[in-house]
Length: 253
Ligand SMILES: [Zn+2]
Image (cartoon, rainbow, N blue to C red; front, side, top):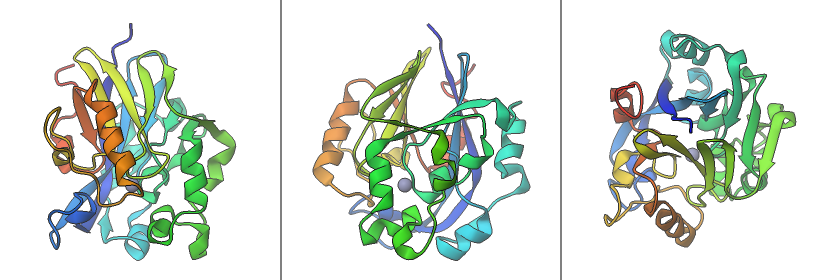
């Protein structure tokens, strides 16, 4: 069986984010800086990216939050430091279609892009409160994922993508959200992305989890927490700077 490794890559910093948007019902009024992430998965025949990160910082600052990107955080540059070119990425998995998770899909022209059907449906017609996260048509914008829809592989529910890598549907932060389970030599690591945007959203079995402040249906969210309780050893977050303290998971290669 393949044992995979997971490499978090920051493609910029999103500043001054209301923390209660990440931790529902807690930390109101507190502003924090968060990272925009791609996760590179290595271990099998394929090189896989989970999410492709946010737009350039000017766009992000104009429409979302004050944002910065060091030249070394340009997605192509950041991947090159890990010895990977965009053409080598054969699979992109979008956990969801918010602007800060799929903006760079177009860079990976050889990749098939795996998305849940329900996520596409919601991204086309989101509730008004969620429209900007999708840069939705209802705001007169063009959703950033649309350019590459011809390469979408649309799936329903859970699916093994390649041996050792599965997507797990987790209705939570968005209705068609999917986490990515990665079999490592230390057990199952779940890339939780915005299901658990910070490490503090999920502290393991028997501890009360904290939903993201951005969600549609809280009952579904708690069902999804129950679903991961059984198997994930670790949940890697969508935006927590602390994840960058380690270059690779699990630990020493
Ligand atoms: Zn999101």
